[in-house]
Image (cartoon, rainbow, N blue to C red; front, side, top):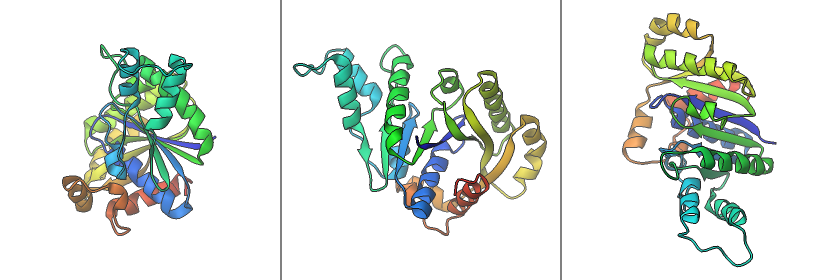
Amino acid sequence: MAFHIAAAGKGGTGKTTLCSLIIRQLIKTKNTTILAVDADANANLNEALGLEIEGTIAEILARIYNNLDPLPAGMTKDQYVAYKVHESLAEGDNVDLLVMGGPEGAGCYCYANNILRGFVAELSNNYPYLVMDNEAGLEHLSRRTTQNVDVLFITSDSSARGIRSAGRIRELVENLSLDIKKMYLVVSRVNEGSIDALMPEIEKTGLELIGTIPADKQVMEYDLLSKPLISLPDHSPAVAAVDEILKKAAIL
């Protein structure tokens, strides 16, 4: 079973940046292989990792269950789903990526999430590490997509609203008794002095602040130019911050 790292938080709090830099540091320091899972309907972890995706779980299900793809002879629908999901795995040098995508119809993610959970459990046996970029908000927790997690990083931007949202995620995890061994708070896009002003709100969350990620001009430049964040240089302040966070969490 892979060591499972996940990121959760409201939209725009830097989950994808954090996940891509976690993957970068694991590859650099441990020379390991990683299964990355993009469980966000607004999927863009592939761009941060510099990977091309052929399809998402939601797209595969939509085509099969709307009879747009004929079933091969001798194959059941579930067998064909399994085959197509394996085929959709985007492969990199040290990281492979599975992407959930958007809802398969009428706004329902339930079946796509069930498929995702099953394949994550199966595929994770082949990798030392699994890194999951969850969708924004709380719903993925109530659907129990995020389970069997060794370390959950709850992300917030440098705002009181973001910190309060992180606190609600902690409360939901505990209320649902999810199998999450450790939870930490990570605050992103931090400018000088902002953390001191936020400390009263941070203390109310009951979360341990394991680190902050500074507002990094190189990250903004890479995003602007559609360059993969995994290729950021070692001297990037964001890279250095994530490296320190992983060491504090005893992952590196």
